[in-house]
Length: 325
Image 1 (cartoon, rainbow, N blue to C red):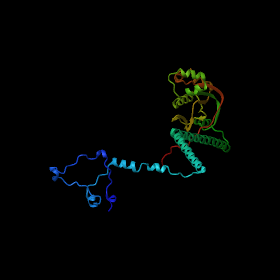
Image 2 (cartoon, helix red, strand yellow; image 1 turned 45 degrees about the vertical axis):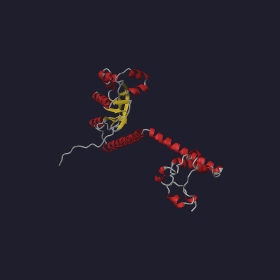
Image 3 (cartoon, rainbow, N blue to C red; image 1 turned 180 degrees about the horizontal axis):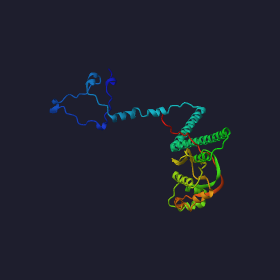
Image 4 (cartoon, rainbow, N blue to C red; image 1 turned 30 degrees about the horizontal axis):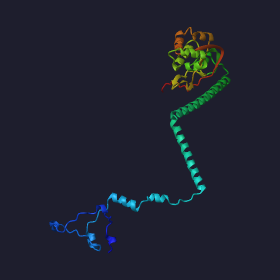
């Protein structure tokens, strides 16, 4: 077996580190030490059995890499010849990347816009549109009911040939089931903010008040009660007739006349003796009420009219109590 195939990797000893002192053969301790004779170059068995030099040292590996493999493999790969690309493939890849960037930017802007939008606003808009549609349907159905009531009255007159009694007419007028026309008054009042938008002088007076509030359903109920107690025969608020089954109440931020929502300014029309109604509903007779309105920034205005027409109110099914047989 050749020496190069079995001998471990070794490094020559520099001349500076060569041993200078050698043990003398005539020393008295020569007999107590082991033999350290050099191995013969062709003694393969002795070479395999002797202790091998440890070469798993990091510093030795580093030196070996620097001597035998001085070039980094990745650097060697980078020096390889690149594949030639056509101009079409280069511009096609650029266009694809540009389209992807535009799509990602557009999607991101939509996402940010959706995060900034208030979902409650959309819900409110949907509810408002539904409420407006329902109000339109109610008004249309109210007109149909009034027209049918008029036809029923005309047919009744043709069949019976008799004129209704004054008591029946008075009951129908009070219940608001018939269309009426006559002289009366119109009281107009508005919330302070709405009044300031329509009248600059009113806004100046409103700015000086310290207890501004809006008109409530209780205010309209009080005014309607005062008109009825002072001789009003028929009353409507913003074109909605007040009948026996008509309520004035607040729902959310709106005032409802029956099932129809109304907003400021409020116009209360009353048929009756216009002079008496104008006097009884004026500031002189209702000084405390007008003062409380003034403190809140509300300024009612009363005007008389020779002819006011009020449509019939919507009436539901009336049920009467019966004896249990």
